[in-house]
Length: 286
Image 1: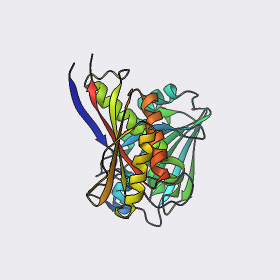
Image 2: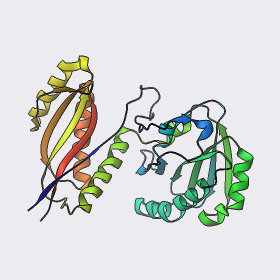
Image 3: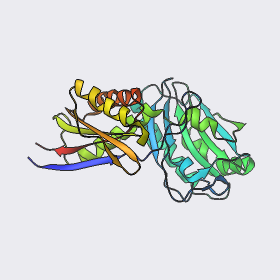
Image 4: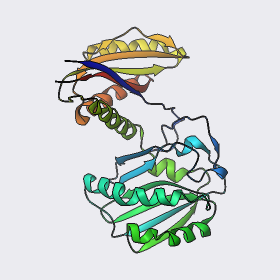
């Protein structure tokens, strides 16, 4: 039986807490620009799929605010297709991947209208697509020219909201930290499986948590508490300007099992003021 190490770091930063369901994480890239120059181009997009707490299925570009500095004057356009919803997660995934995302990507290739297509949501009765733009009229013309309605559905209505700080995106579309972690779990599992991993086997899974340098006591208490929950805890170390605590425990790596574990560790980290960073394990083959 061969074992190969694999891990994925969740490159994220925690923003200050404000409204509920706020933007907890955003990716960091070097090519951040004013949103005047975005339009869905020149940055690395990162589409994630999840089911929100209110029952909507959401496909969202989680990297968009890494490439832009939200400013005043931008408009959020919502295109709503009544009667184009779905009831199950699998049905939503198929519809997003086969119809919605290709249409969005096709529209985003046209650089003339200064628009960024940031998300699509579905519930049982409707599909909604969210776009940020400076040129509403040009956006409407582009949609008509591209036969967008015919590709996705009928009976489209467009509503317009001034949204100077991208609050709609941050509060209604971006996943909270729990759903964000579940998305990352799925990606790690897919990476493991591509290397031949068997997720029903017990894996030795390590979880990394970071603490501010002035929170040494909290980090030590976190490690001590983790030990009472049958985790093995490494010594807390100072590295890259933070304190790092690593705890390890055997678990399966199917989505349900690993999500249960990561939620447990995230809640424990939160109790002591720490931030969950990543988990890693080795590929387990038959």
